[in-house]
Image (cartoon, rainbow, N blue to C red; front, side, top):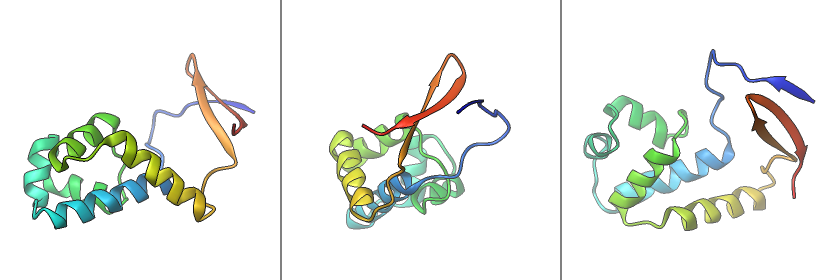
Length: 110
């Protein structure tokens, strides 16, 4: 099935984003980094960051890189660990979504 991507709204954060957000939130608490401090580093306001670390708002790759740098976390290892946790809970999607030339498609996961 192929459908055109909608530009009207961002998709709801998925299980992987929520897992990553939980780790980020926990590490911020561990290192006593406030939401205001992290928001300033990331370039968003405190309210937006709060939604990100509660898994209610998407986190871009660039934002994740900055958060990981502040927390001294390897972003690749964080994403891999979060992906394993999601898979272990059975929350990994069955199909893979991709975009080629602005057209969205689906295929089986490899």
